[in-house]
Amino acid sequence: KIKMSYGDTSRTNVRWLSEDEVLTVMKNVETPLEELIIHCELGLGMRRIEVQRLTLSSFHFGRENYVSVHGKGRNGGKYRRVPLRKDTRAIIDEFIEFRQKVVRGKKDNGILVVHGGLDGPKGYGKTGIDKILENLSKRTGVRFSNHDLRRTFGRRMFRSGVPIEEIASILGHEETKTTLKYLGLEHDDLSH
Image (cartoon, rainbow, N blue to C red; front, side, top):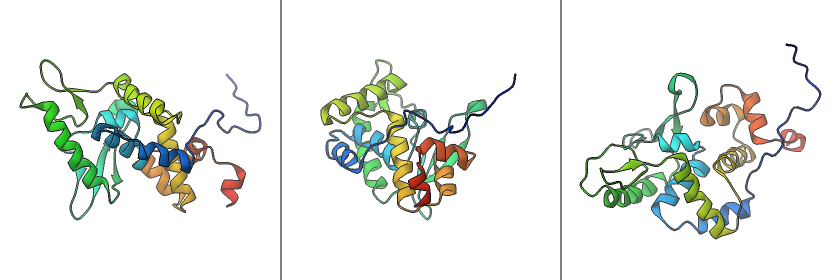
C-alpha cells in the first residue's frame, strides 16, 4: 500500500481547557479522590491508565521527588519518572487518609486509587474514573475528558517556556513530533 501525505496533518478535534476553565475545575473539586485524579492528569500530565496503575509505592519523596509512572504501550508499557509539584505531597497525604477509610482493615492490594468491594478494595476501571470526572464536569459546567486535562497540562508547560523535549519526556512521547501534534500547537504558538 502506498501512503500519500496531503499538506496539513495536524490533529483536528483537539481540545484543552482555557486558564479560566482550569481555575473553575480546580475550585470545584470536592473529594480527595477528585483532587488526586485532577492533580495526576492536569497537574502531572498522566493518562487515565497511568492513574489506574499507581500503587502506594509509586510516589517518591526525599532528595528526589518524583512519581514512577507505568505508561501505556506494547509489552505492558514503559516506566518513566515524572517530577512532582510542590503541592503533591499534601494531596497524596490527604488522599492516603481518605484511602484508609475505604480499605478499613481489609486485605490491601497496594493499588492507590481504590473503591470498597465486598472482598476488599478494588482498583477503579476506566469507566469508574470517567464517571468521577463526568460528575465534576457537570458540576462545574466545563466540558472535558481525561485527555483534555493531559493536553492542557502540556500546553500550559509549553506556554510557560518549558522546552518541547522536556514536555515530550514527561508525557511519555518518544518523539517531539508526536508532542507537537498532541498539543495541537498552531503556527502562532510555535513562532512565539
